[in-house]
Image (cartoon, rainbow, N blue to C red):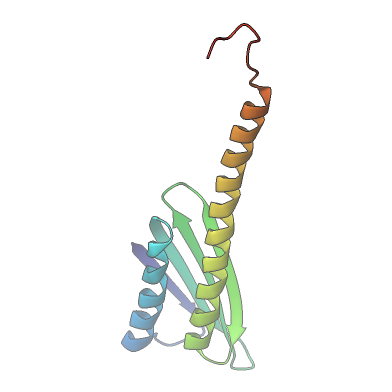
Length: 117
């Protein structure tokens, strides 16, 4: 997975923080095939960190999450949960639509009265 980092009003993003973010985002690959991710980190006037993450799946679906917290690690933890929820909902929605299609096809099928069993 290719992860791009952008930061604003922050002099540098530490190696430990960068590794923590990468670890949390790579954990999402267990749920779906992720092509790349974009991580925007900014620090506002109050000293709070604002993080916006966009994850693009191989299927072309984009998942977005944004969070404001006092530390970058807290932002990442919450964003990981949000992205996990979005991926799960999308997967369940696709599965349910396939099941509904099968159900409607089954209802349309009829057995011919002249059929021999």
